[in-house]
Image (cartoon, rainbow, N blue to C red; front, side, top):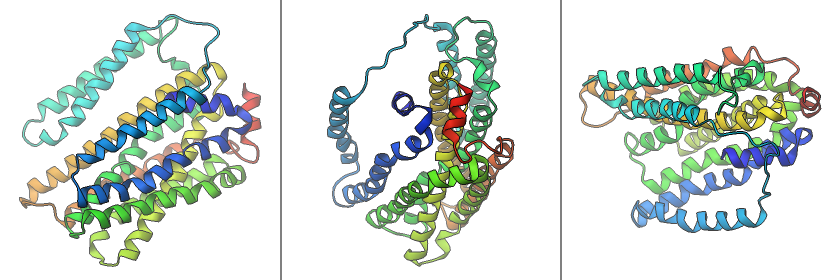
Length: 354
């Protein structure tokens, strides 16, 4: 993903950055739209293991097309690889992921996840010390001197913790408390991708008219409200109302992520784009893992409190309150974005900074 995103940024240039970032993920949105439906059919009529076999021909086709159409960009001035920084950053991420994987054990033995998080923090601090002294660090900390990149990166963590668990929690809620089958669940989840596709139509115009800050503040607040509302879905039996809520959540989530991702690169100089994209990809994957681990931990703790053998509707309400609060936190970060960033001609402004 970081390599593909970086290639698109280089091909589009600063002049077409916003429009390119809006439309580059449109094919992926089609995949997300048909993915739940296809997965529902496979699980309902075949076996869940067949889902993984579907990836094989798709990956082969993508690999063949990439080798034929992909431009082979090369850096003119090669720099030595920062192996110590790579080991330290990798250890930070690995310890964090291990801690996330053990979050469900926090009620039985809190030492394991907390110890892993402490190790991740220690590795991270050593990496920062190393990066400040290395001539060519694997991640240049000068990235965070850029206000737009710093704000967007910091906001991405609580935003994804609050929102990314949606794909994990919603199918559970539809199938366990509501008793829907996998096929119906897949069809309903497809509404989120339809909403994401619809957001592509208006995203570019909204950003050019109101700027990144003007889009992110109200829509991030709306996304937190929708995330909270997801926890109450099991109270209704109207499939149309559920589909509408999922569609609105998909629309708002896609618009917020598109705006936040593009804002982080809009002011970066060309020499920092490579590392900016790479680090943003790392933060994205870690945040998604943390979101799923956090959701699983909340449901696990709640189930231990209630001592119910199965998850119940109120368990998901508690989870939606927690995730909704996390989704609201980025509003505080986005408030500090420059007012004019992205307004009218975002790409020309980014070009001036370079």
